[in-house]
Image (cartoon, rainbow, N blue to C red; front, top):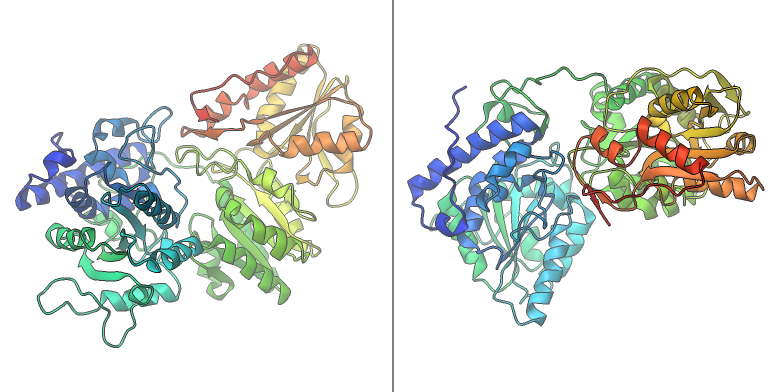
Length: 618
């Protein structure tokens, strides 16, 4: 497939306004070629950014950032914005350690205002910023929020629309980037409503409509917004006309733009699953991966879930706009009526699961670990309080890598440790994941959760012994030296480095054993019993050190009168930047050398080395 040339001549916003129509068309082609070249080399969000090339150009021609505030909801579609604001050269290190973030970043540019890459937030930010502008006498500075139709399925977006629309003199411009998709096709009644608006006829003068079709009520107008659209999101002239009108309206406005995710790149437009939402390093002509990935934790989960579903009619799956990335799409392909995609609505997903459990089913709620944060109250009060059999499967737990601070699933163990009656399992290898999933589904007296990282499942790690009794208290011993100096409590996949560290320490005369509790919360009595038999306990987890497994083990030992000191190794109490999983774990000391170093310091009575790193910030 022939691609336009990649040009270094990409103007910044000031010069952008001087370009003519033909120059803008050429520029859009060059930007698409640049994106395809750079993103397939480094990996990143490709489809969403190809879909907003003309829209972003028009936004920067009509609005004057950073004087005007431009907010990108779910900022993975901000690559074009970065190119137009002087960060083109940074794409050679896109999403790499110390390089350009894949999301807006205030540290990178004054043109970036928010860096929360969780969906459905931009409208609430815009509401607050518009209030601040009015209070400070700066109402002439526009506040613009670019939000996708998928993000509108989130409750927070609807709460913000409810407030913005009720303030007729609050000039917030909502740019609705409607491509019919979030990660997957957008679901729900609002998606059907937008489909109706997309087919509305144009106004008599050929410009955007200011009302919905006669037989279709307009949701946005009913909430108090001026509605402009639908506008072809790839027609810069039409976009500028609508955005210019919105800028001077002095009231809440929705500019409804219709775009094509993956626009201008044949492999993306032909991909009916996710329009190449994200890609790894790939051949730009074919999108074939440059390397063959090993089976991931998600692959193991998806395969096992199908096997279990064949023998359990009560098993159903729920996800929040992520059926493909969480593995539930595979179950949906076999049993479509047993998988529910509720859109970007984690809170609804959890409480809907509670209702399904009340109705006699066992829901498996598959989410990214970081997104479960949004539904903590529902886990606590709607599921756990009622002791309902709901299983949460948390993908992308711990360090996820290049997506950065907002996507690391490094708080789930801390959050879930506060939930009474919730059992949390962390598999060390693929066989353990299969066992934990079966045990979770067999547990009918309360919720369970299983977490695993975004990574290959790795080699199997056999146990040399299993202690304790009962499904929740059995603990696997992975290494047991003759001298019981140190006990390492390995949490999940970190068992590999824990075993390497134990072998080194034992060879140096420090008898070090390793156990895997498998069900890490609540703490098994067997862990406490083994702790009492050692001189030092070291817990190792890829969760923040605050309130995670290590804290729970220390508390359990204290409550049982066990005086063995407990040292907790984990991620810093900070926001961790982007980089590869091995790089970031190494920076936190969660690798073989780091574990050895920490054990030796602890045995010598010296404090942990908590040296700050440029890869995280408090």
